[in-house]
Image (cartoon, rainbow, N blue to C red; front, side, top):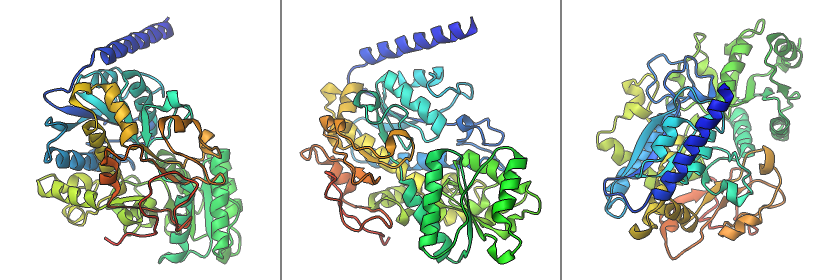
Length: 485
């Protein structure tokens, strides 16, 4: 009976959402709204996916993840402030609407009533989320509401099915490139790791990634033992770790540990490591592609052991903003103006919000990602005529202005497939010998907004190629390995 009532409630929400889409009409007179969907603020330890983003977490929060919500919000705010200083959307201001997850709706495809209600507001024409679980809800709910979902989440619907994935625009980074950056940082930075150990989330795709990381390390001249799957029970985990990474000969023990795991899983893995007999955090540098989204990441609190002096995340290498994939001078200018306008630096500086961290704050990758998403949203809205300013009209504009994807994730259909059907939408995405690469699409050059977004960008793949890939019918301005700021 309870399941039946839940199903009936979901159908009612679906009908209400569809009616709202049909009835939504012209350009609103008050504002054009982008719903920023973030995690609930009631997580005790940050390990539950649907509650791991916290935009208002108190000092001493044990969540590694929540700061991304703030940085992402800052990027959106910078883009929208910039747009409003230049006429908004056909004279109407654009705004970010902050909405926290209800903390209750946990199923991936479930319709959270507050979220559906927010998307059905006549001012809403786009939405975005960054956390996987609420990102999945973001994806499905946006399809029901008919609005564009823009974020950095892997598509839940088949990304090669035009009808199912039409509402989602995704920005991600290739995990293989992440792995190379991690490996090179471990052996070429001041860490100078001679031997490393690799722990990975135990699914076949991540196992391939772990083996690839091992190949990279050995190719750089550093022998590495076989990667170890992360078991969730302590006896198995401890036995495997002791067997692989604690040989009797001290010189053969790893100095660096790579943990290939999502952020909430990283927390659990670190907790398991702390319970392995004779394991000491001070003996290792821990490297992970799971991002610790505080610009002053050493200040992130989560464990009494004080491990963070030895925790290295890809998002916090020495110059994170100029070693990423889409670096925009417009972003640097906009984020600077945002702060000079009185926007609190501590909001995006550190968990503790201390003055030193705020003064030394550098633009983070999630802030830049938020800015690019905000710019894309603004450009699509501006490319939609006021007379046709409907959710369907704005959604169509995304495909005319320029939809772009970093084809990266080693799961499911993102593995080794080429794309043909996307060409029906002029989505020029082709593969090069099965290798995942950056694909950027420019469809209608007469609009010109895509050029405005990327003229000042440098698009690159570290250690993959130094020249544009001829097989990819994309607009890639420049392929390089660095952008001096």
